[in-house]
Image (cartoon, rainbow, N blue to C red; front, side, top):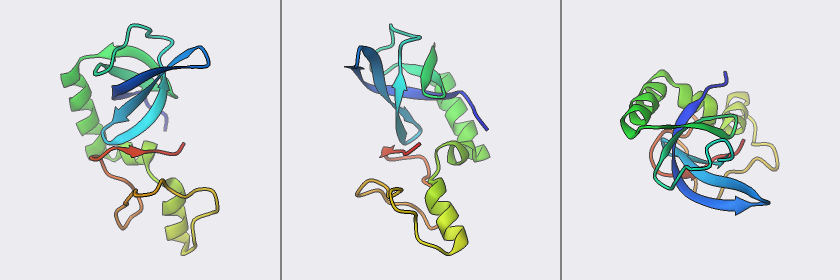
Length: 122
């Protein structure tokens, strides 16, 4: 499933003449392109789809949507550790090259929950 998910802009930088941001999606942090909403600032909330911020969103709406998505399991589906879960389900080791960043702790099911910022792999 592919969703537009609200996230909070943590930092902004220029990369190869493209305005990019680190965005927090309820504890999962990903890189997002800000070219469609060039006036976004650190602390703003945006609706993000496939790595592109599409529009600004107020904080309350963003928090309500993230809470709903988390309760429905949508955040795990979109941002979970799919390699780790598949390996666990198969009783195998993670494939080489899919290791999580040092210090990342996962629950027994291998899917990160909201809370604490973690860098996610796509």
